[in-house]
Image 1 (cartoon, rainbow over the protein chains, first blue to last red):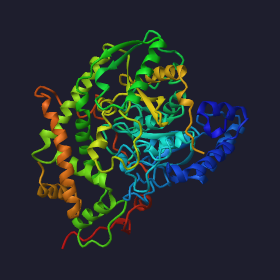
Image 2: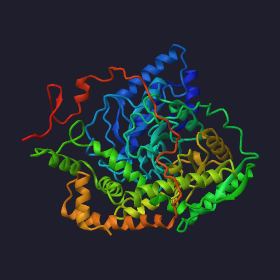
Image 3: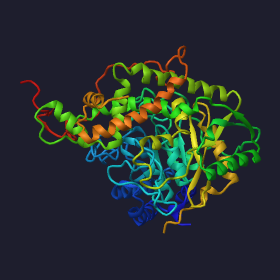
Length: 488
Length: 94
């Protein structure tokens, strides 16, 4: 198997033994990236010089006998909302098209310290607002599966597509209401959203600060454990990062699910769910039963209110967070304005795309005088009920198993004119975000059109190790994660 | 129902210059989305405390000590217009 198709842990063994150099691996990944990029558009910025420099540094470390971390010499992609010192960070927005951060996000610092190689900044929906990566100012990313005419999901669609197309070995994305899990499901890769507070958000361009979380997109579960290991932990620069010990995420991967109780929430098989998705997920749940888990039906009664609750809260926070783009300190500024107010208004009108404006409008409305109690406070109260739902469910089981998205990837352009339809696709990922829980998407099948389907596993706060353990057991019993798109 | 005049007002609050077409389209779309959000009113929440945050956070204090993180030049490097270590904006005081 070509090196660019392999996992972090398989490559690491070859790098340590000297069978493969980080430089050769990086060249192979860059070559693959260039071979597929004009069809997939997974990247906004490719950084070959930096990658070669980092690969040479990793090779020098290996030559010294310094085997470093499991990420040393591994080519990664970073979602373009993670600040990288000296490398432009656009958030896929016209507003930040030429923004070059003066500092690294904490996760970037940690990956650099681990000796990783950065091949580029991955495409996304503008400011992470979207479920298809079509809201990128630059170009939509195409799903490597199903004939290149489907969306890769979003908002971390570039990261997911890059991993699926072997245009990197693994990637980081961010998840606010499903933006890691949903694209992972739609592109047949593994995507983990950690517990809110597990990974520092310092240097992640803010969308909805009480929901945003950075996490890995990888080719298998073991790689997700390795990448999470490198980025998890408290950070003095993010006061919302939890001061909770970081366990060894790889240690329990082989423990299986024997004797474990897995909850199946009845509300997660929603009306309008694609029959092929439902069949694959039900078969996946059965696979876990065969592997020794006990299944219990549970209820999460507020599920149908998740999308409404999420879009009130996320947009309210977004409208506040995006107030910083005023054309003064960074980002673009509209040409020649007579006064400050019209400079602000024109700058923001020119710099933001339609979906971002729509969300700022909704959020501003929900926070405005006279509507605050009806929308924002109401949604915060619903949020309490979502946490209660999950707390009660976890009294009956260890972890939950559900679908990720009610449908497989849809066609490019299909939902662009109907924002509400696009939002409704997030019904099975947003409740978990509202409760701040860790969840993973693992491949559990393919439709007849060759489009991937994901299985979601959810655990109580800070139980990423449990989520990974169940996911690894599923992966051991299946081979969906080894399938590659016909993209040559 | 949100009117086109309210959309204009909210756009002003959000510091967004919207074209007449955008105002029209956003009025329609916001009405559809807000109608969907109104289903939250079906859930009784009188005795429910709001959750602003999922972590049980306490305030974090640190000593107020100066640290050199980035230079003035670095802080200004992304500014659309700057001079003599300052950001430049259109005239505010007449």
